[in-house]
Amino acid sequence: MLSRKFIRENPQLVEEAARGKGQPVEIEQFLKLDSREGELSSTANQLRHQQRLLSQQGSLSGHERRISPSLKQLARQVKAAKEELRGLQKQLKELLLRFPNIPDPSVPQGRGKKDNLQVREWGTKPQFDFTPLPYWELAERLGIWDFRGGVKVAGRGFVLFKGAGSKLERALADFMLDLYTSQHDYVELSPPLLADQESLTCTGHFPRWQQGVYCCKDDGLFLIPSAEVPLTNLHRDQILDAQSLPFSYVACTPCFRRPEGSWGRENRQEMRLHQFRKIELIEFVAPESSSAQLDQVVTDVEEALQLLGLPYRIVLDCVGQLSFASAKVYGVEVWMAASGSYLRVCSCRNYTDFQARRGNIRFRPNRGGRPGFVHTLGASGPALPRLMAAIIENCQTATGEVLVPKVLQRYMNDPFVKSPKYSPSPLSPPHRGGEMRFSTDGS
RNA sequence: GGAGAGAUGCCCGAGCUGGCCGAAGGGGCGCGACUGGAAAUCGCGUGUGGGACCACAAGUUCCACCGUGGGUUCGAAUCCCACUCUCUCCGCCA
Image (cartoon, rainbow, N blue to C red; front, side, top):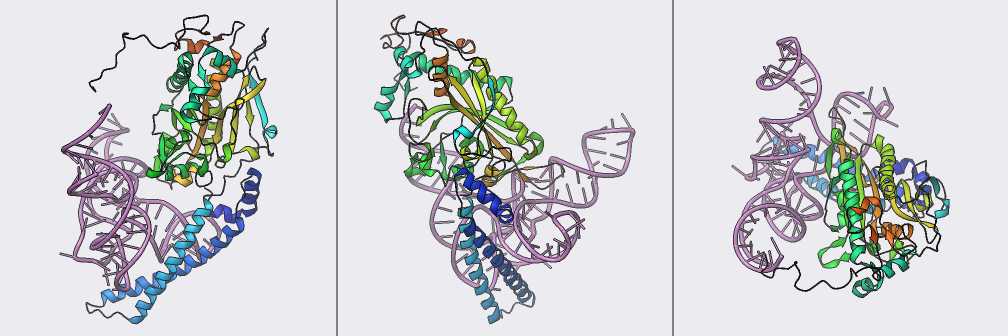
């Protein structure tokens, strides 16, 4: 959320920023309501002041209840003014919640992906002396990624990992969680996967992108589109201690995204899934350090990719590509060897004080100063299925196997993901009467 | 699902027979005194938001805010209604 004062003082800037993002805004309407609210609140103030004075005089002058008719009249006026004010403020708030964040000055102009600015590249793209297979073909052949199974259960846009595929997903999650909690100072969280309306409003998903979120109507709860929602809301309505900033959290959760709305059509190349697991890094930082911290988050994400040995590039998103709540976004895009293109696995975002205002997340600077809004950062990603796809494509061998990156091998049984025809199938049903038994007594 | 208790400032916690209550007390924090330094002790200070005067400073001042939304009243943290949330006990399921 932007502050009313800021919009009032910079209407054309706000208007242009919104238009640049492709999320236009009713600025005239706002200005009208805003000035009306200003006038009204000042007259209401005066009336109320008068009322209090007279009312107190009455109480001091004795116990006989002689209420003058003019006092009653005043009370009616106060009531009417308050009522109108309430209505105005409600309208203003609703309007305000639809104003997008202002892009940082360093963000390049432009509309589409092609206008994004490449910042740097890392790694050597693998060279093959055979034609590499796209991930979906190889994964299907290896029996680790079941496209039909997901569809059967929940429809298009859902996938199902099997055997070594499922294990690979787990390995990636564990590897990154371990990395961020032991090599860095992120605190790992396992948050609820459902959130209420207020939480989604704080992060900026509501009210504008409501149709992109799955809803459990009867309970007024929503499936989180990202762990960003529960993690950010953790400190809603709190005043954080300045000394303990930044607060850094990491979580690996499923994310749920409806096909409607801004997410568009799904396809294999772009991999727009309706459910996927993702590592999320969230930070609460002091305003003056958010810019530097954003760079730090990007390098933290890069570290994971470097350890995985996946070539990638970093791009700075142009204005038109920025999400509603973001002021600045670095995209982390990983090289896909078969398709010969980059695929975004992570967006590192600076939300500045936008979410903090919505969620009233503040910090108190030293010496009992006035509280200010924190800045929030989010590295929305890395998304596990996309990383898995990248590993499958980039690490494939001539024999149609996948050589798992070294850092993941300790989490796997076998450094190679092999085709069932070369090895005993990991997909055959488990042996009956094996060592694993599920108890039936309910304990 | 049944029964009960509660929601007050950064935290804890009074107030809840309606009127200087923005709110006692304590903790914490800040400043100062004492000390070689510290602890302990003592003194002072310390809510948030919006507006006015004014230099968007200091200061003065007004209004709002005691879970949320309504209501009663000249006047409500205090009374009434609805809602939300939290906790405890029981039940149910893991």
